[in-house]
Length: 393
Image (cartoon, rainbow, N blue to C red; front, side, top):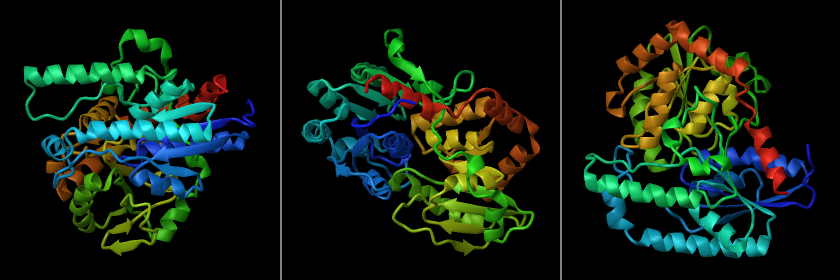
């Protein structure tokens, strides 16, 4: 592997939720191990998360979407409260990124789903590598009129053009027929030469994490089915589901025990046991719990689905209401055969237990998972990304 002594890489992941920043962390660590220097720019929850790893982090102007009481994106509220200020924030972000790059003087800019940083790198003529799993996103709508189709088409065309301003586009997903984010990757053929499907990014492989028996012993479990509920995402999106699931899990039959991570990196890791559920504000080593559990319950976040598959665990996916990307991810995981998906409004003790039993009693999910992991080299994403970065250093 090429050494990166003296190389400086500027990371700029989206700060909405932790999926973007968390998948950049192993890449940054690997660059540091190879002698390079890194710096991060992000916002919202991403700042606290990255600070825990000792990285240099600067806080960019914040941009976000409004949500309602169910956790779903509220486009009307976003327009009414943010409106044209979102465009102003984008301009502020570009200005901020230019200033930070001029100070840090990076040899390469590594972007995770942020248009502003791509624009800034382009203005300063610095090579830019983009990682994303949603090339052409669709806005959530209750009605799909011709007007909104035109709006979506215009937005997607402009956004696709902006993504393509980067030198390379990395897709951290599985090869077909197992590509999870397939619904969101409808890129024009002219951009194909820039795109690389690299596989999943897993810096800690499940086989190298804490032994499953240790986790079960710490939880005081005998032969119960262990369910790992990793509820992540921005706080306004995850909390409605957490408030719904906690009392449901506490009433699960005695044959089950649920560990629920509440996705709060500042909440500590002290467990609280309520009936058949153990609540933990933040789990540092999620791979140990993925390894120890029998089944995963999650939102439709791309990284969580990928990691669950990498750990050979079937999933129950509850996408955020009116979130096209998560619905698309959930559909794909269900079509592939590694998950059951359900609407948030359908969640109940009976519906969850029924799906858990179906997945555990159905050999198809395990067969697909074993095939994916044994024959597809799905966890080579980190290695391939470092090779791509090396081309520009």
